[in-house]
Length: 144
Image (cartoon, rainbow, N blue to C red):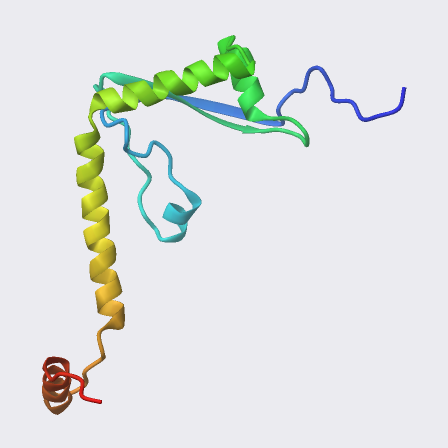
């Protein structure tokens, strides 16, 4: 038979895991590459928190997928109907937690983005004379 085939079983090159406790479902549980690059500290789990997460670190070969491994471990159905039901359940759960919390965060991010944009478009002023000129020209109407 011609064609490409995958192995039925594949052993990861490395596999490590940690069980974490956490309070906030929106807080990061892992340190990203960006966090490392900017010297940000790794998130610290809370030992007495009510929620539990399993953090897995593994190295797989080509054409092998961590999502499929997790589905096999969890005995999850991989068909499209089952995945659609999971997505709907997740969306319902997020809606039940309250849209207000998300909206408040979105407004805070929008305000921060607006402040950054305004600071980037504001003219740089190096002395008081330039500041006075910039203020006057901003208040004067444009005449053509």
